[in-house]
Image (cartoon, rainbow, N blue to C red; front, side, top):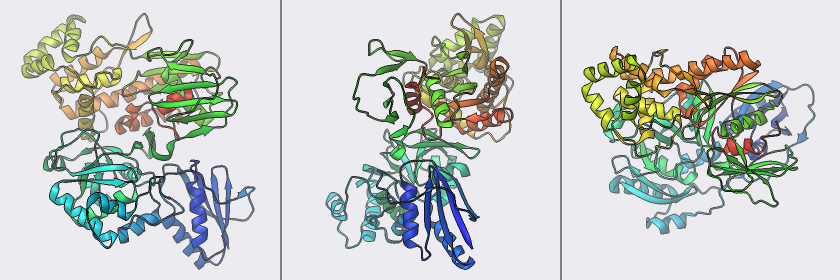
Length: 596
């Protein structure tokens, strides 16, 4: 019998080349290894029992990955033209492969060399950890068990890892900025956090991203957790993994940790979105030549392109004069720079990833901190704005209350009734003043305002107020929410979303007796319906082929899920797969604007 194991792996980090060579080393059967672009193949001939043993070995060694799109086994009858796989020394930073994970779990020794996942350029030895901590132990297992005891007794430790020198602290200690939660035992995370199977699958991928999760009420109360969401991650290097195993033996489920992975993922309906880039996501390149050398820097990401193709990284060395692209909302820093709309650049990056150059599309760009935009694109017409999000005059809840009062007679009656029915809440609305994270997108601003008007938030952090509404909505288990009015009005600049109407409808529903869970979900559910309506409008105008989704607000799994449900009935949905859906994709797409 002759069979082929086939994999589609879309990342160019060389992981699967190293992995398949490792499988070849361990196999007792002679194997043939092939690669054709992103397609990898193992072929073998043997009796059924031997092939079943090989399949079992491969299943144990092949990791879950954000970029492993397909894995199948089939009988191979004919040779497919491809090149024989060879050794590859491409740079890589995979936290640890399944084989290494098993070794660390069994021995608590994180220093085994490996040809698949490898080590980072930072070299750390047992002697380094002993010198740093002062803990003397003859074996790695004893060292990490002692270290776990110190953490249990003192409340915190500091330890060098392959992801930097980390502070680990028990959850009852004082929370610090820029910390996430390292969860030590994947088997019971659903007892502590509201988490879906897709989110758990994402956490367990070989890339080890973080996922934004809401703590459950009991876990929150037991550990005095104050934030609506926390970035949660599993051990993302072998030293952190060894400590996690030791902490599990002490019945410590989770600890604070800094140096949270910059790779952050959101999931819904089996769709995994990269929210922020990290680890081996960069550099990224595509073989698409440009006539003129071009460069763009956007939120810390740099992209450049010339006749040799496109490249994205954190920092790039420019070799020649280039055309510079600067976002419309950025301060001018270069003379004669070309201004661009970030939402257009985000769509352009999706077009490049999916090869959609000739297609007419509707673009939905909902950023959490940057301007959002709904627009359409066709080769004949270009980019056409449909909904702008630019009402920056209403920045505080009390200003929103006054704006609704002065809209019309109905608005005045609504505010008067609201004040009579909820006098304490209206006092809070008058007193709340957002002073932190106020530079947010208008959709985020609407949700921040809504949390105050619903009675969920009384603080000063606009982004935290937004997350409070999102975290409350997650608790709602129904299928649909009340219709929040996301409506556009005509202005001199174009059609703009009117935030007053959204908050006004929420006030009406609260007067009707709807609770905060249903109201919070209504803001997300209704936005998904609004998206679907805009796609239909674009289709009626230009005849669209599909819809592109981009922007960090789609980290909200309910919005992502509801948007897919509402759109996928009528249109294909496209989004970034190798790039993050905000920031990095904008820089990458910007340098090709004008070559559509």
